[in-house]
Length: 39
Length: 229
Length: 226
Image 1 (tube, rainbow over the protein chains, first blue to last red):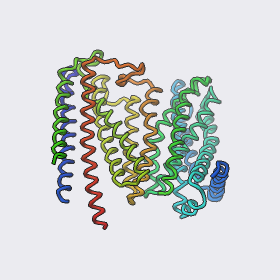
Image 2: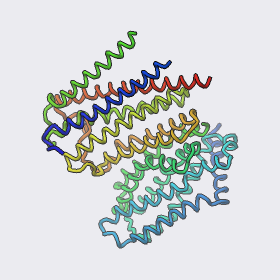
Image 3: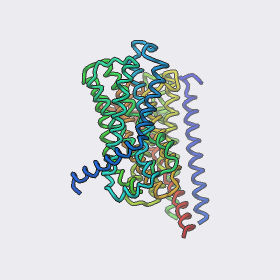
Image 4: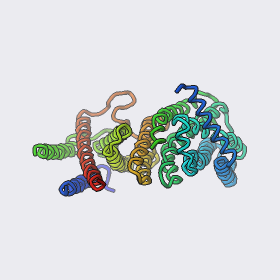
């Protein structure tokens, strides 16, 4: 773990959260689009 | 639809439960033997002298409630599952109002737990060398815990009776709901062992009482829905 | 097509807003006093995640009660979607909180009352999904799951408010502390409130997506049945 004084670890954590949430959003959007496109 | 007729109906359900239990003794056997087995195992392996004096209130309180809790889990879930198994649930739905069924089953679970406590707690106290300075507060706590546990167990039992794989599901659903209760009961018991004053046990007692009250209100609202689903 | 344009616009707005929040969290808000290093900056993400989890469980309660009243399958799907999002955000809040605990107190996990209560919360809503899996009939599943969700929700205040009060906790004061005041630097407060708004926006976005998905699936199923 990097030293607590640096911002690196918080930046790391938030990046992971963001990427995760964003991927979740995108995957859901794509699925909804595909299913609604079938109608 | 008067209150007194509801009470009569509830008592009739309770009496029916009691009679069938006296005939088969399934719940009493499973709860009692489960409690006794774990108690013997704990008392044999740990006993009163393996624990330091200062750790006693903490550990003994926690172990007492863990034994009671798991013994209760093994028996309380049967109240509704057995109706489904014996295909008597339909008859019961026609014969009594939902609220009366719920109250009768709840009374039965309370009685079962109270009997378990009356049998197990003194035995535990003797075997584990449990010294209690606030006996009356502890009894109040046991009573409150008995009612609160039975309330949660009864409504969860009603929910799982309608699902498949009820046995494991009951533990999964009931344990997290009962954990806050268990935390407060253990904290209160620890205090009752070291202090004879009511005021020290009161926070835990209030917490348990409030949780029981909330569960009661939720059960009265939810049980008819669950029962007819 | 104005609807679609509006939705697109609002998605961009949420994105831009969150970028602003991230910038603010690292460069605008001052370093908090009394914490190890910069660790307190996690508050701008940890608190909103926990807030969204609570919000999601409230939505779950609301839709569950509505299902019990109206028996609309879509309400059941809404409740499930809200509970799923609540679980996701609770896990994220647990992870961020645990990282903060590591930096601040040296351990990821020390069974602090807050940590106990969030574990129980996760167990409760995991049990909710276990119950859903165990019931094949859809209407019965909806009713029983809604009943359990209501029961679970009423015990939540005890986890969040009562149990942490009985035991000593290392957890910093919640945003509004016991004295009923907000002790926070005003710039930090601005960023935190902005983050709350932003995360709520993301929740709404995810939730509407989940509901759209459920609606399509329900309609398709009904068509197959008829």
